[in-house]
Amino acid sequence: MNQNQETSLAQIQNFEGKYPKQLWYLFFSEMWERFCFYGMRGMLTFFMINQLFMDEKVANLQYGATQAFVYAFTFIGGLFADKILGFRKSLFWGGLLMITGSLILAYDPRQFFFLGISFNVIGTGFFKPNISTMVGALYKGGDIRRDAGFSVFYSGINIGALFGGYACISIGKGTFLAGMVPENLRWNVAFGLAALVMSISLITFTDTRRSLGPIGLSPFRRADGEIDAGKKWYEYAVYLGALMAVPLIMKMVTNTQYTDWFMYIIGPLSLLYLIYEMTRHSWAEVKKLVAALCFILFSVVFWAIFEQAGGSLSIFAANNVTDKLLGAIKLDPNGVNNAANSLFVIIFAPIIGIIWIAMAKRKIEPNTVIKFGLGFLFLGFAFYTFYATRFFADFQGMTPLDMFTLAYFIVTLGELCLSPIGLSIMTKLSPARLQGVMMGMWFLASAYGQYVAGLFGASIVSDVENASAMDKLISYTEGYKQFALYAVIAGVILIVISPLIRKLMQEVK
Ligand code: GLN
Image 1 (cartoon, rainbow, N blue to C red):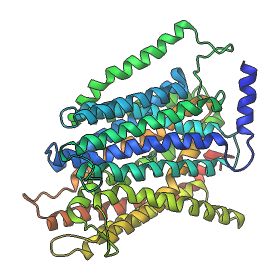
Image 2 (image 1 turned 30 degrees about the vertical axis):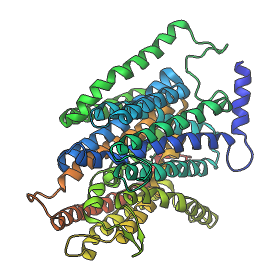
Image 3 (image 1 turned 60 degrees about the vertical axis):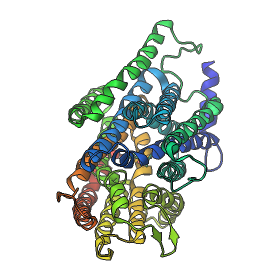
Image 4 (image 1 turned 120 degrees about the vertical axis):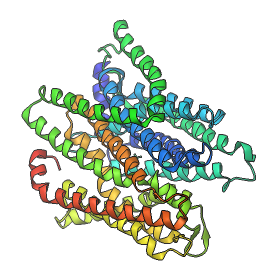
């Protein structure tokens, strides 16, 4: 049995052509999962303000808290996958929790809002890091096709995010399918759509998982394919623990002070854990882990700025952005806010891939660290563009959708220099036994990013009582100018210290 699995792993990794076929299966599962995830998160801030009548500041903070937990749980999900469940069972369990959460929201989004969200938070934690790690497992160490694989996978993420991000909120707001959905059920249908699509994701995965050979099986599996009855209890304990965490998450999200404490604890704890793991690895492996940690720490800053998307930029879109693109195409500015980034990723990911290859041929391709640095510079430039929208505003404080969309284009260039490459580099720099944990840590950086993004977002809300659209425009854009500066500083530092990080990476490119 074991022998067979070994050969099948070799078969998978010795694929011919550009991509392994399993990549496409994971691509589709992740695409549908991201439809559900981005569909839902794209509704949160708007729903909290307009349906739950929360204050903008509170909505920003609570939105940031939900997103921080989503990504914080990816660390926990990655850890349990490595040690107990294996990637596949984690994915399945996470998917089930996400479907449950979305169904609860579809049933009564107002009354059970935080309950539904909490199921989704935990579910995503089990699903998200482990599917990315499985993509990495399709490649042998040193296979130069790995980055291209992650780039395709990243497009899948964004196809899902694009359709989910646009469809769910516009159904909820009634700017899409309004004729087909009764007015009083719009939000139920919008959340219900997320549940439906998440089911498609899970069915795609279960239908194709056999093709993954031994990838993602339980670490407790014996040579004969069975799991000791005693060890099964560990699995049940994880399932039970996850369910017990639901009310806890609810409490912590609604009281963002608890979120603060949680964030103060989980990061240092994960670092301690990593240090402990380091003592069990060789010096060469440790140096690579330290390099991975540098990427992780910088990415916190990136996401803190980038992730204004779901929070302050969503409010900015609703308050200050017109609904006409190029003077003619009428579009919901919130829909654009949720979808433009993904659309640009889908279009430009392959183009950037071609540019890297062309540069590689001329031997001028920037290394991973410099690409990260460029990512920050683009991010800075994009936020200067969000700032500049104020110069194009009318007297009512409404600024054109065109400028707003242009800024998203530049944000996307930055993201493409950092995010898919980050996933890939995690799988390259981590030893086999820490793949899930390190991917979890990569996403944990997003958790901190989201958390800080919420604080940043709340800090730029206008203090003027009964602020006019113009007051809001000024106060938000002033904030964006600050964020732009932070991004540029981070980019410059990264580029300056790049030789040091490259030394730690050794032969990894
Ligand atoms: N947009 C990407 C995704 O959904 C990256 C998100 C992140 O790491 N913060 O996977």
